[in-house]
Image (cartoon, rainbow, N blue to C red):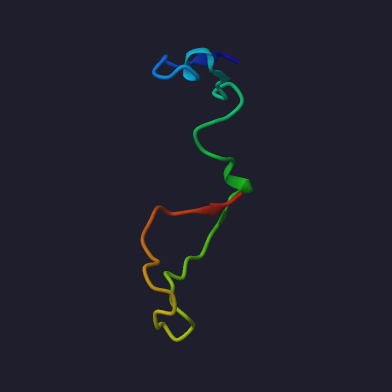
Length: 63
């Protein structure tokens, strides 16, 4: 696992490092483990808005 270090913009960042996970993860999750996630957009069963300002966003999935 490669170690990534930060640029020293603040005193704390100067010595901060973390392990990258590119060796153990893929870009996409295993398709057999993923299930679709239904979104309501803040609507109740009648289709009326019950929670304001909810909707849009990126598509999500359960894993």
